[in-house]
Length: 284
Image 1 (cartoon, helix red, strand yellow):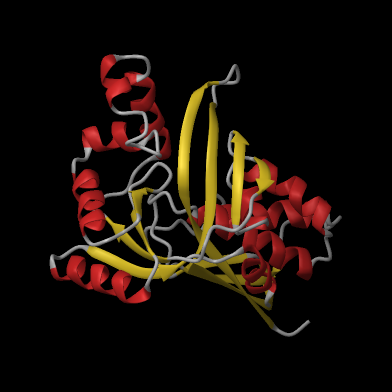
Image 2: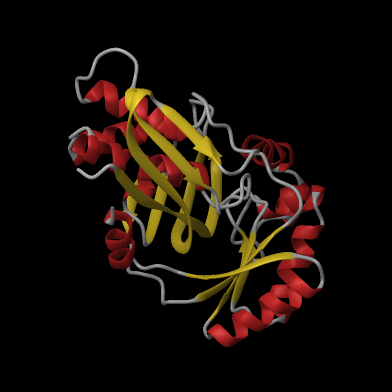
C-alpha cells in the first residue's frame, strides 16, 4: 500500500419516502427509494506513526469518537483482530455534502471509511456489511449505490432498475434538520386531519409536509424548482435539502443560476447509476 489512500463518499437523495408507521422497537417503518448523486465528500488516509487521528475541514463536523468515520475505523480495527487503541493512520475528511440536509453525508462517509479501512486492515466485504448495519440504517445503502428500494428502517435493501439519468439542482436552506425532530413532527400529526392533509399523492416524501409546517421555505423551494421545469421536486429524506430533477443539463443549470441570484444556496449535480457508483466508490 502507498502512504496515502483516497476514497469518495457520494450523497443520496430519496426519490420517495413513505412512513408506514411505528415499529414495536420504536423505529419507523419505511418504504423509500434511494438514489446516488455525484456530490461527494473525500476521505484521505495517510500512514503515520502515533495514535489514530481524524481531521475535518468543516468546523461544524465533529472530528472525534462521535464521528461515524471514527466509529467505522474502530469496528474494522477490532474485527480485523488488531488489539489496543487504533494507531498508525491519520484521516482527513473534506466535506462537500451539507450537514443535516437529508443527503446521507455522515452515513456515506462511514461506508467509504469501511471500504478504506477494510482495504488497509484486510477485512473482507461480508464483515464490512455486518459492521455497516451496526453504524446506522442508511449506511448499508452506501455499500450498494444506484437506485435501491429500502424497507423496514430503510436498511432492508432491494436493487431496482437504475432511474433514468437526470441532472439535479440541489437547494440547501440556511437551516439544518434533525432527523429525530422530523420524525417527531410526523408522529405529532399522524392520524390527524392535519396529517392526512400533509400526506398522499402531493407528497412523495411523507416527512415533507410536517417539516414544511415548521419551515415554509421548503414549500417555496419545491414550487420554485417546479416552475423552473423540474419533472420531480421534493425534500430529500428528513431535510432540509430540496432537489429538482431535470432531463437536460441546460435546464438544471438555468434553475441553479436563477436560485443563486436570489441568494439561495443551490448546487448543480447529477444522478449516478449503480455501475458508475460501484466503480467510483472502489477507486483508491
